[in-house]
Image (cartoon, rainbow, N blue to C red):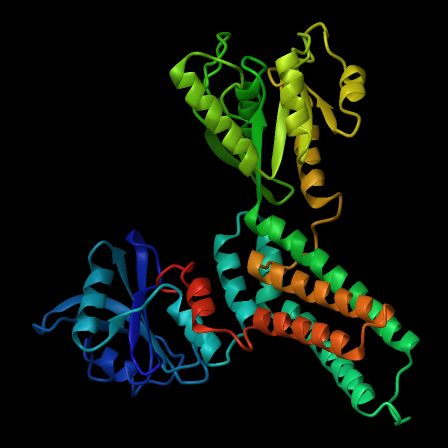
Length: 455
């Protein structure tokens, strides 16, 4: 892969101040010189020194002016010989530059190929590579800070420390298994249990920071559910602080799911306004009800909206019991009207359910609901200091931690040292996969396919 010269537009397509075309691979500077209209070649210029030059096509005519710069192998983003051409933005200049470079022997880069080469060449590990995408996709200051911490390598250092501790423990277990009669380096059962408990505690704290960062990175899907005319669309508008959904006194106005996103306390919250759930003979409304039920099933959290001015129907109570089986918040809406349903009455029916009383129409109590959404998803833990990681990385760490717990259980139950050693080996394998120390091409393809071309 690294023997080929790759080229891509690193800035977005369309009209802009500049368009940056980047190249990477051995010989890319000489290749760039073939389209540079200057007496002094790029190869003759010092590295990391930007200079102004013309760009010419195969017909010998100059088509743009650009700033050009080169990077030596070992000192570039990819770790390879690299170059950048900063031409004028617009729909043609960047495209023309790419076409001319490809005509001279470069090929268009695949999604994430520059970052993939940085990983392959040892410039960054896999956790840092995935953090690059987190920085690009960050939707809040908190998410950006979490991904930046990971990109700078602090998360990888923590994982390496964890992996090193597991390796040392595995080595000690192996010695004790092979040479039980040797006194030197021998650990008692209590000492092994103490070491594993310490690792589990440290791993748990690290996993908590990863889950916090994952929430900041990927956000939350919250579905608004309830029977028709309880104020679901009004609640959506109140949460977004704009008139996004049509609101009328007629029940069943919403026939399809409406999705929008807002950010609260750094957490992107994708809110889904669903059709009112009730038995109906209307074919179109029935389709909307089916979609509502699917939205509830696929959501991380359900906001069950109840009209405080009307008594609960049996159909509503049945819906509430279904929703209460998952993560949810009961929203007692229309608190500005005379109450027919109180928080006390709801609590008697759903004693374990969090309840927020508000008026979506007057937008009173909405901020309290936003706080509660974040608290329910985060488990009440602080999201500050989290690491910007992916679901894959979090799963690797969780699996490693589970394997250490299995090793501890095997030790306590005296199932044999070999069982504990096997569990520790699995934990080490998971952490190695997280860092990309023993990753497969399929894994790399899956990771870097999510990147944009040019990064």
